[in-house]
Image (cartoon, rainbow, N blue to C red):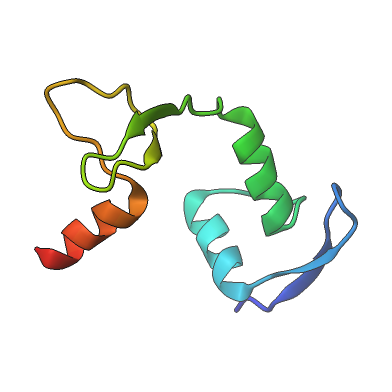
Length: 92
């Protein structure tokens, strides 16, 4: 029923494929317009509309190295750097 279509991104001018599956999804949602931007430009546009996350610096409770975390550290809870946190998850 649907066939892949090649479209041109209005943002960057790159050619992208509007797949048959995407067309079916658009139709199921009631969308009548084809996408105007490629995936990369859509993602960049979405990211630009979101506020940047505030990052906090804390000392890793395991190795003592500085760790950037997206939450305000509290004194009663340990904070771990990415590497130590990953090691703890593997051990579980």
